[in-house]
Amino acid sequence: MADYPYMNATSKIEEFFSKIKGMGAPKSVTKEWLGSIGFTSQNDRRVKRVLEHINFIDSSGSRMSKWDDYLDKTKAELVLAGAIREGYSNLFDTYPDANQRTDQELQSFFWATDKTLSPNTVKIMVNTFKALCSMADFSSESSNGAGNGVSGNATTADSDMPLVAPPPSLDSPTPTLHIDFQVHIAADAPPEQIDKIFESMAKHLYNKTAD
Image (tube, rainbow, N blue to C red; front, side, top):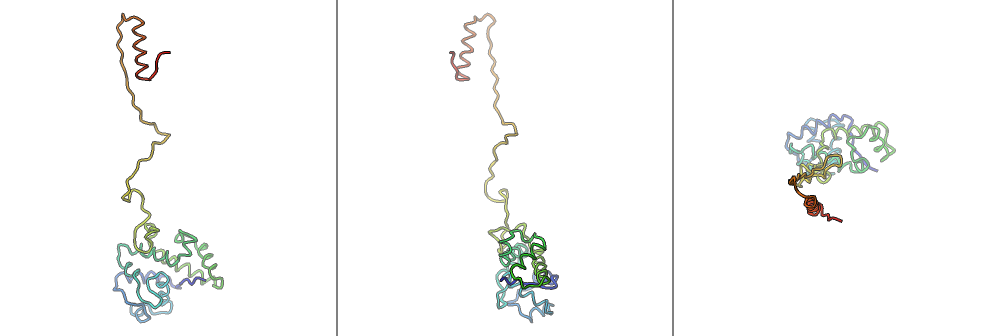
């Protein structure tokens, strides 16, 4: 049975992640530290469970490397996308584009992991997941760089691999080489000489010999 986090007021999730970008990172997340930054209610403290689920902190509340990576504003959204993929790995195994799935699809998934959950709790789980996704950049995230801020989904044009031109389309004209020959024959040349000229042309140009 998976234990997915949830917060009733999902706006607090966005507030928290926005706030920590401009702060020094704590050694650990405690009730006292959360209170010192304005997160004082029982619902606010549920953010600790969210952070643990996406590996920003460990089970004791100690800060992990993903938190530090997230503080780099140039890759924060990519780091968060990778962290979400790891924390919700079972969901992304089912739906690789889980961040784009409908509420109904997500609710069905979360309920299937624990059928003792109430419909309201499942709905809040979905809202929590979507609140996290709204702050992450999945469009640039790569499968190899998930969670470490490495930009992905690179096309050939963005990589160091050389571009190879595709073969010409069958629907487009193929380039050809056209050569013109001009043969000047004297007006009084005998028929035998004319025949020899064309026999020679056939032999050298078309590899044909007279029968």
